[in-house]
Length: 79
Image 1 (cartoon, helix red, strand yellow):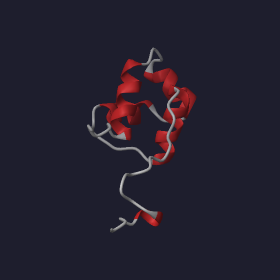
Image 2 (tube, rainbow, N blue to C red):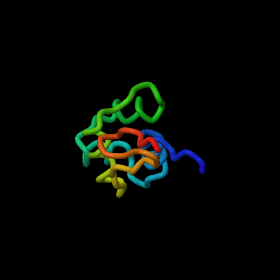
Image 3 (spheres, rainbow, N blue to C red):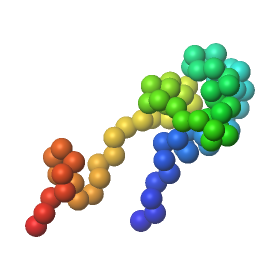
């Protein structure tokens, strides 16, 4: 199975493809335009708080994914 795209890559694609301007996105999220531009150009990363704000406005959902082969507390189960 192919690896899923990172949260950051999914957000970058959503920002670029969304009809909202970066100005409008900045106003709706409280994230400055320079931060958005630098993030899209891969010149900076963002915090999870910022990712959550962007995801909410862009209609994306951040949720945990259960990893195969892991038990409680992220420990690998051994046979």
